[in-house]
Amino acid sequence: MSAIEITEELLQEAKNYLDITWQDDATDEKLKGQLRRGITYLSDKTGVERSAPAFLGDDRALGLLFNYLMYDRAGMTDEFTVTYSPEINSLRRKKEVARYEAQTKS
Image 1 (cartoon, rainbow, N blue to C red):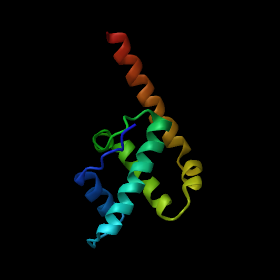
Image 2 (spheres, helix red, strand yellow):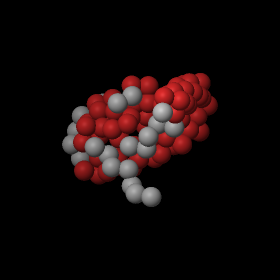
Image 3 (spheres, rainbow, N blue to C red):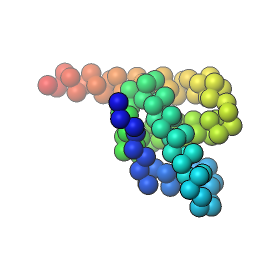
Image 4 (tube, rainbow, N blue to C red):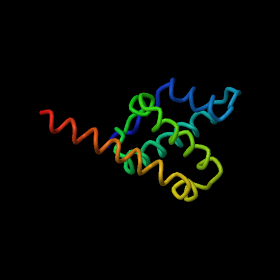
C-alpha cells in the first residue's frame, strides 16, 4: 500500500481552515501526517477514494476531514467519531448509492 500523497492545495486549504498563518516545515509535515490519517480513517468509514483529490472534490468529505484535523490536533479523535457519526454514515450512504447507480448503468 502506497502512502497517500498530500497535495499542496489540500495542505494550504487545511492550514487556512485551521488558521495556521505561519510557514514552518515541521508544522507542515505534522499536518500532512494528520491529513493522511484522516483520509485513511474517513475512506475506511465512508468509501470516499483514498486520495487528496477525492476529498478536494467532495465538499462533505472535505468538511469531515477538516473537522477530523481539529479533533486530532486536540488529541480527541474518539470524540470525533461520536460527534460526527451521523455525517459519516450519511456520506457512506451517499457513496454506496453512487456505486450502486454506477453498477446498474453498466
